[in-house]
Image 1: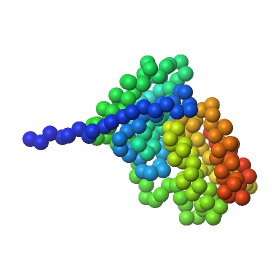
Image 2 (image 1 turned 90 degrees about the vertical axis):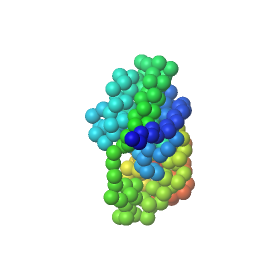
Image 3 (image 1 turned 180 degrees about the vertical axis):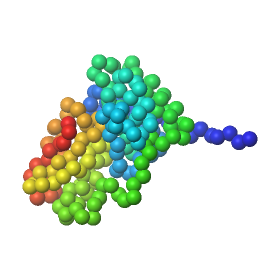
Length: 193
C-alpha cells in the first residue's frame, strides 16, 4: 500500500513595521499572484479554513493571506515570543496535510475590469507593479477601491491595517508616486483603517 507523502513545508518568520503583526513566509505560493484575502475576524473566514483555525488562538486579532505568506496580527496584550511558535507550527501542520490556505476560484481576474477608464487602468497598473511588491514585503497589501474627482481610494490590508506607519507610507510614498506618474491624481486616501 502506498503512503501519502507529506508536502515539504518550510516556514520562516519576518517582522514588519507593524509591531503587532508577524509574517509567516512559506516555501510555495498560497494564492494567485496579486490576489489577497484579509480576515478581520473569525466570522469573515468562510473561504479559509486556515484563517478560521488561526482565530481559535485567543491572541489572534486578524489574518491576512497572499502570495507565499500569512500575516497574523495579534492582540496588544500578548507578546510575540509567547505565541509565534504555536502559530507557525499550526500553519505548518495545516499545509503539510495538503490543505489549501484559501478555497476560492475566479472566473476572471478580480483585479482588472475591462470597463475601467484609461486613468484607472494606469492607477491599477502602478499599484500592481510598483507599490504592491513593497507593501507585500512588509506583510500587507494595497487594493484599489475607487477613483473620483482626483482622489484615489485604496484598501490597506494585512500588517498595513492598523500599522502606525501606514499614514506615512500612504502619503509620503504612494500618493507622491501616483501624483507624479498620473497627473489626474491629486490625493490618495485609505478606506477602512
